[in-house]
Image 1 (cartoon, rainbow, N blue to C red):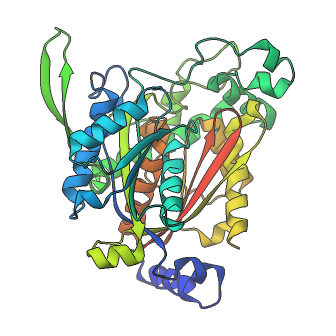
Image 2 (image 1 turned 90 degrees about the vertical axis):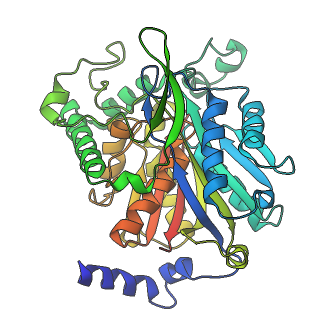
Image 3 (image 1 turned 60 degrees about the vertical axis):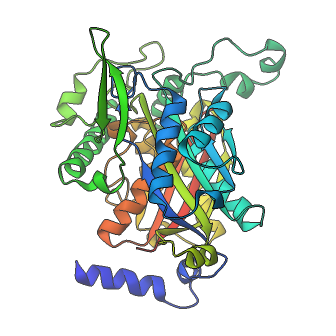
Amino acid sequence: MAVERLGSILKHLTPGTALSNITAKNPDDIVITLAIRTPLTKAKKGGFKDTSLEYLAYATLKEVKERCNMDPALVEDIAMGNVSDGKAAYKLRAAALAAGFPNTAGAYSLNRFCSSGLKAVADIAHAISCGSIEVGIAMGAESMSVGGDALEQPFDEAVTSQSQESADCMQPMGWTSENVSRDFGITREEMDKYAAESFQRAERAQKAGLFDDEIVPIKTRVKDANGEWKDVTLTKDEGIRPGTTAESLSKIRVAFPQWGPTTTGGNASQVTDGAAAILLMKRSTAVKLGQPILGKYVGSTVAGLAPRIMGIGPSIAIPKLLNQYGLTLNDIDVVEVNEAFASMAVYCRDKLQLDWNKMNPRGGAIALGHPLGATGARQIVTGLAECRKSGKKVLLTSMCIGTGMGMAGLFVNEQ
């Protein structure tokens, strides 16, 4: 292990290489000084089932304020990814004020579906980089107990009749998963095998206490079966199913028989409530404020593809991002790919020839859950924690995006 770590350090320090360029430390680097998340709980029946979106945001931001060791008045803007709540911007502003951030800090919500949390990080990072603000918080929060991503009604035919791809934007996500498995020959057996590994990795990580470095305890209230309110403190992810095997997953019925035979409730991401938050500023600002530097935001990109196979988005976005920085997957130490469905996870792993040991080492959304607007930020929290624990350096995160996109982000661990 010591030899492996030394080799990794030398690889990143070799002068003049693309790796050394992204790992170099400069005053204008955009750095992360705090990265936290809530436990991820089962929507409609878990610990956050009776918790409002505004309370989720408030409780998360309150933890940021209490843990950041700086004057909250320094925060100039807060961006929150959220998919299912059209009033999220109102709720975030109220939550930020309640959490103790002064009214001088702006707040807004954004929605690029499952990449919203990463998009929030990119937005704040770019605002700092161009001098619009000096310090900002990027976060994501989702109450899937209340909302989701299903369409309430079809789009206007005057629009969708112009293009098959336009009409395909209305396809439910489960349908797109079956399209991926059918188009690219991904079998139910492969998907269950992948999903079982995700559960097993998450189970090992939880038992070893690895998530304790990511999760902040959240106090909330839950209504029990008798309608009585109880005060609870949530500290653990709820979606992990101990003892899961490919064989046990093979017994779960198909979720979308009208569209195909491969996707199930066991090999797809879970419907989940949760939040994550990341504090960003320039390196020079962090040094001046005496802030600990956890990592560095290098860059991110988005790429589009056919809506009907939106799940393979990471296979498009990842090469695009790596090419922008002259890197290959051999240069990446940890890869967090959102497991929207095992169909897309298997495809992206195999298409990119990803080392499975590097990919989602603590499990992914199949085991942990996928609170839509929060996942993009949650992946960064988890990935940096894994890098700290294992002595790794370069983190890549990616996810597919409904309607046919992929996004990817690149980070450097500095702990």
